[in-house]
Length: 199
Image: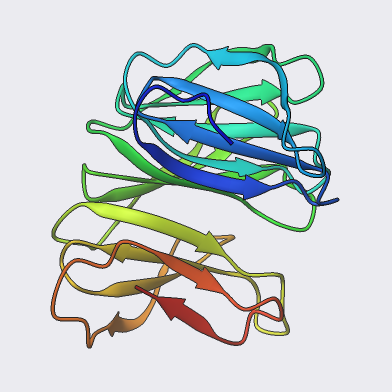
């Protein structure tokens, strides 16, 4: 699937598997028909710098993107139009973003400013204080499905650790997860939320 003018940093399938979205160094997001491989509509333009990460909302109607311009942006998937104003608050590049399942009413972002932030995905307002604990850039974030003990956020950092957070309160849970001997750039939960994989 060609079209980006530079590195492609993130890619995801829509929840129904019919659409692929990609984020690039060329400051754009692009949508693709997963069956045909054809580009859908025009590139989504608005970030002022590299787009590092993207996520589909659980209902597949919206995209959220994270960029070098220290903002996140919401997009209407059907029209390709930006929704509202950029979500601002981070003090460095934003490297990761995830919607909070099951309804996607909240989102979480990860930044080079060593913090995570929670957002109301309808209004774009920040929720609570930044989540602090990492000593270096936070590169990736994932959110589990709700479970019997609540819902968890996991973050991956250049400080070679992962951290767990309570998705509702933002409180840190337990000790950092250690074992990597270099930067941790990616993290994901298993579908049932019981396991984590990191890279």
